[in-house]
Image (cartoon, rainbow, N blue to C red):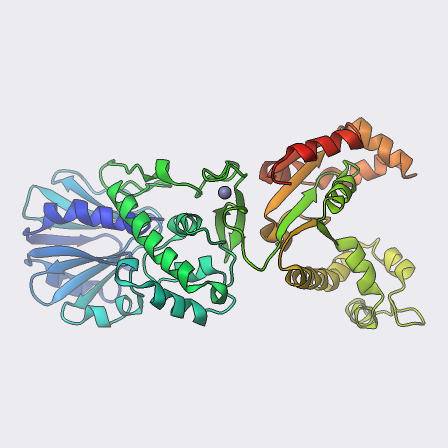
Length: 462
Ligand SMILES: [Zn+2]
């Protein structure tokens, strides 16, 4: 998706090439991208193009007379200048036949682009332009601070991408700006200080300027015109760099989801105040996860165990009654606590198991969040079965993956007096490759406790 710098690059490229030319004809190939009746756009024919402006990510073609044409490129929209004899191409939306020796074409493979006619005298006061916030160049830190206060607990990354709050930052540059500002993308907006807001504004200006200077980043398939490509990509510090390391402190960068968007940050440079650093350990069954947890507890980490939390929840009468209600049968014992034997036997059925999880998982997660709140600082280690694609992934700053060879795991399972074959079979669906790839650190749990302690001691981030 083109961001503001790419749109500005398009503007700077096109304006000197189309300014002063007249529209000889307008061919519309796909009317759905145009707001309202397409007939009215023919009013542009015969008019001279006076200039090309930009508001946020809207391009504004200024025509002689009363009209402007707004264009939002959305996902994949592109404006091209092409020679007169070039035929209509696939995904062409419209073509302005110009008085010069080239025509202006709007092409959009994803077809989400938006074109609309507005009054030149009043378009800045009308939707959609009127809904846009100020751009960072027109905004002071104090203003952003006041706006963020109103966004309450919304993560700051989501807030600064809200174009009605501040126009200009999309997903790529929001990650870059927060990295440069040393602000954690998860931070609740209301907790951002005035100094941080000031820094965010200044870094937004600097980074957008830099991106415009380099002609946009051309991430994805976006090339701003006729194959001219930007070089910003090589200057990105965090966006698209998951699996890599922080250029400032050397720590493994982490990718999470914030407000539904992929977000890459450095957990150490961008440490969130009033929140502990969250470490998680994952790995296949019997690979040594609990040893890792124990070693870290000995180093002073606070541990959160999902299994223990479930145990505690089962002791409360409220959970027994919600479960009984959800399952349509009583699972409480005479003390009003969950009768675990009854529950376990019921959970052999997959549908029942899912119903139980639907009740229990949100409660465990709630407990986890209040556990984090109660800590405020320091380091936390969590061990969560079914970690992959759970909300815990996005709360984790540093993921430790521990693997062990199958023989070692089999031996450990035998030591636990369980049938290794059955357990290893059960663990087949475990997304080892996915988690290993996402991990900040991979440990080898095959070689015993002292070797594991050594590996952990060698990692500067543990
Ligand atoms: Zn760092």
